[in-house]
Length: 124
Image (cartoon, rainbow, N blue to C red; front, top):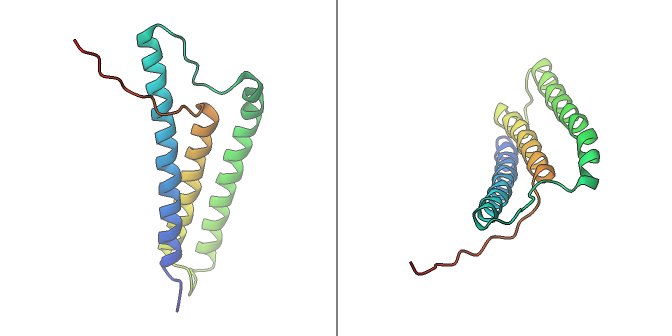
């Protein structure tokens, strides 16, 4: 059974999962920050200062590696004239996986993991 198109759909689904979990993390952090601001309590949602220097150095390296992987894979696919086993959908799925990982990496290094904030209903 050929794996043509199936691999691309699986990689696309994995990229979509990374993308959505990254956006959920950002949303949780911003909700915690806004609720802290409303209560008058400072809530720091950024990365810790010890980790910030490491992230500052690692981020451009990570982006360059992801860009190189995507460009090399695309160039090899085009120069080989496609593949009997891998389709253009598979290439697109791989590139979307790289994009999803880049977004996931950015959000996980920029925002702390905040527990979902419990919303209490106050009587007016």
